[in-house]
Image 1: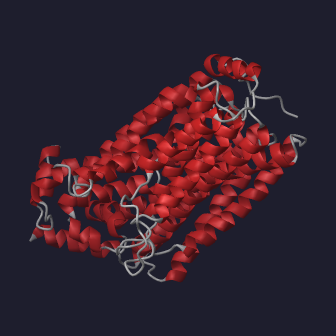
Image 2: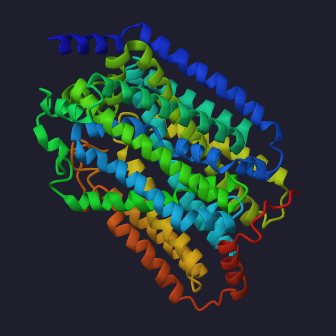
Amino acid sequence: MNFNAQLLVAIDSSQNSQNPVLNISIFLAFVAVTMIIVIRASRNNSSAADFYAGGRSFSGRQNGIAIAGDYLSAASFLGICGAIAINGYDGFLYSIGFLVAWLVALLLVAELMRNTAKFTMADVLSFRLKQRPVRMAAALTTLMVTFFYLLAQMAGAGGLVSLLLGLDDKLGQSLVIAVVGVVMILYVLIGGMKGTTWVQIIKAVLLIAGAAIMTFWVLALKGFNFGAVLEAAINHPENAHGADILAPGIKYGALPIDFVSLALALVLGTAGLPHVLMRFYTVPTAKEARRSVVWAIWLIGIFYLFTLVLGFGAGALVGPETIAAAPGGVNSAAPLLAAFLGGPLLLGCISAVAFATILAVVAGLTITASASFAHDIYSSVVKKGNVTAKQEVKVARITTVVIGALAIVGGIGVQGQNVAFLVALAFAVAASANLPTILYSLFWKRFTTRGVVWSMIGGLIAAVGLIAFSPVVSGNETAMLGAGIDFAIFPLKNPGILSIPIGFFFGWLGSVTDKTAESKKLAAEMEVRALTGYGAEPPAQH
C-alpha cells in the first residue's frame, strides 16, 4: 500500500545516519544564536533585581510569551501529542487541566503576587509573619518542586536521545544530559533572568511555529477537514479502540477518580509553581502582570489546539502501535509525524525544538531554585538581611552551578525509569504546599506563622508520602521500581485529591491553635499593597 510505503520510508529516514548530524547541527545553531542574545542581555546584570527579575524591564506581551515558553515543556509537546495519539479523548484531558489552571493564576494570584513580593514566593508569605521559619519552609518546598521538575526534564532529554539522535547506549544519553545541563548553567550564569527570558521567548516562538506548520500540514492532507483526520484515526488498522478514542474512558475509565485527582493537581498546582510565580516579578506593574497572563493563556490555548490535531494526526498517519513500539515510546508521536510529513529536515527541526524546549525550561527552573536559596535562605535567614546585592547574586551564581550539577547527576541516575511520577509530584507538591499558603496569606488575616509552616510541611509530606506508596512507584510494569516490588497501598497515581485538602487543613489548624498575635499593621499594609499596588515599585539598589 502507498501509506505503508510512505511510513516505512519516513521512519527509515528518521533513523538514517545523516539524521543525527542534521539534528545536532540545528540544535547547535539554536544554542549559538541564543547564547549571543544571552551575552548581550547580560550587560546590565549588576543588581539583584537584574539577576532575579530581569530589571523588571519586560512588557506584558514579552513576559506572556516567556511564560508560555516556561510552561510548554517537552512533556506538553511530546507527551500530550503521544497521549492523544494513543488514548484519544483521555489524552486531551491533560491539555484541558493545564489550560484551565491559568484562570486560577490570573484571577487569584498574578496581580496580588506582583504587588506584594520582590523576587520570590517567600516574599509574599513572610510579608507580615516571622521571616526565618516562613522563608525556610518556602525555600524547602520551592527547592523540592524545582528539583523534581528538573529531574523529569533532564531524564526526558536522555530518553529522547534514542529516537532523535540515534544513540541507544546509556553513555551517549548521559553525555547529552550533561551537555544540556552545562548549557543550562551557562544561560543562567551569564544571562540571569533577563537572558533566560529571551531564551524562553525565542523557544516559545519556535515551538508554536513548528506545531503550527505541522498542524496545517496534517489538515492540508485531509482537505482542511478535522473530521476527516478523526475518521482516519478511527479507521487506522492499528487502532484497537475504534470510535472509542473520541469518547472518555480509554485511560481513566476503570478509575475515574484518578483523573479527578490528577486534574486537581494540574489546575491548582500551576498557580503554585515557583518558576511560574517568579515570572510575575519581571514586569514593571501589576497591570502588565495581568496582561502577561492573558497573553500566556492565548498562546498556551492555541498551542494545545495544535496538539489536538497533531495527536489525532499522528494516530491517523503513523498509528498507535508504531508510536508505542518506537524507541521513544509515547513521546515519539510528534517526531514520527514530523518524519512522515517532511522527512529528515522537518524531523531535525522538531528535534532541535524539543531539545530547545528542555533547555529553556531547565534554565527557568534553575534560576528559580538559585534565587530561592540565595534570597530566602542565605540573605534573609543566614545573614538576616545584612548582605549587599552583589554578594547575594554571587551566592545565587554558585547555587546555580551546584543545582545544575545535581540535576545532571540525578538525570543520569533516573535514565530509563518512569519519570512521570516526578512531574506529578512537582504539581502535587505545588498544589498541596504552596497554593494553600499563598491563598491564606493573601486572603485570610488570621493566617499565622505556624499556619504557614504546618501547611507547607504537611502538604509536602502528604504529597511525597502518598506518591511513594502509589502505583507510580511500585506494583506494576510501568512503575519506577517495576512489578517485582509492591508496596503500593494508595490506589491513585496522583495524590492531589487527598494531599491538597491536607495542605489547606494544616494551614487552618496551625493558625487557629497559634496564640501568637501577628502584626495587624503589617496585615493591613499587605492588604492595601496587594489590592492597589502601592509600594510595589522596584526596590532601591544598594
